[in-house]
Image (cartoon, rainbow, N blue to C red; front, side, top):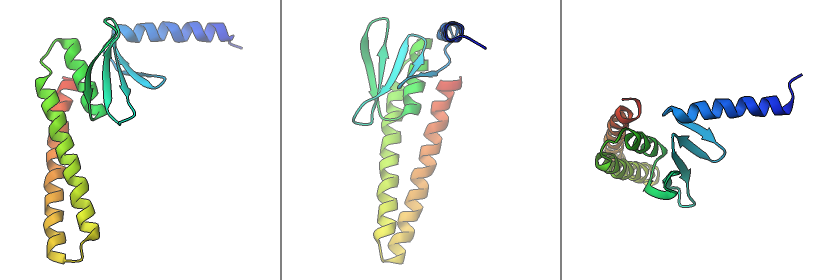
Length: 139
């Protein structure tokens, strides 16, 4: 039978080993990558904190973007493009919600078809943006 102390020691060893790598891991209500922490606030935004300087660096709209931004910070890359991608992703996400709601509440078939096409376009833009963010996360 494993004692609680041995289990806790093993957990500490694993956690300390992960901190040296730039692999995201979940700890309580946050995501940690090296010396950065990502937390969701009450507004639904994701805040990125630098633990070493004990300050908030950025606030973004999506978890995907927060992870990409943190990885770019670790590698010393520019963050401007990622912040622009976050704004674009938010725009297309809101467009998708609007078009979907318009389709549900519309009684006119031609109006519904136009909204369906625009929904598809917004969905495709969202996929493209996510692929671009993946290059920051996995690249």
